[in-house]
Each structure stands twice: as structure tokens, then as C-alpha cells.
Amino acid sequence: MPLYDYRCQQCESVSELLISANAAATCPKCGSQALERLLSAPVPTGRTKKALAAARAQAAREGHFSNYAPSERPRR
Image (cartoon, rainbow, N blue to C red; front, side, top):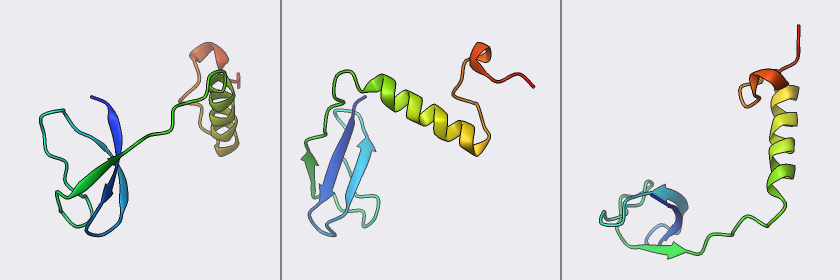
């Protein structure tokens, strides 16, 4: 199931929802079904490795290494 961004026409909130194709989307804030599906920005080619490196650096600064492979974790 793909993720889609939706804008509620009633409360103007924007949400990212994971729903199946045959299910009706509802606003998580107000419960309205008057949602408009928005175009999502694609990930630019070649930027994935930079984004992964940035996420790993942030995890290391915070002291958790859950997104590292066991061979990449620092030795204690």
C-alpha cells in the first residue's frame, strides 16, 4: 500500500496516510471524508545515500544504533 498526502477540505490539515485502494480516507483530525489527495515529492536520485548517512549520524549523536548493521556498530 502506498503512502499518500491528503489535505482535508474541512479543517485544512495535511496528513500522510497509508490506506488501501478500496478504503475511504478519513481525516485523522476531524474525521471528515472530504480529502484531496496531494502529489508527493519524489526522492531525488542520488540523495538516498546522503539521507541515510545523515540519519545514521543523528542516531549516533543520540546514542542509539538501531539503524546500523551489526558490523557497522561501534565496538565498546
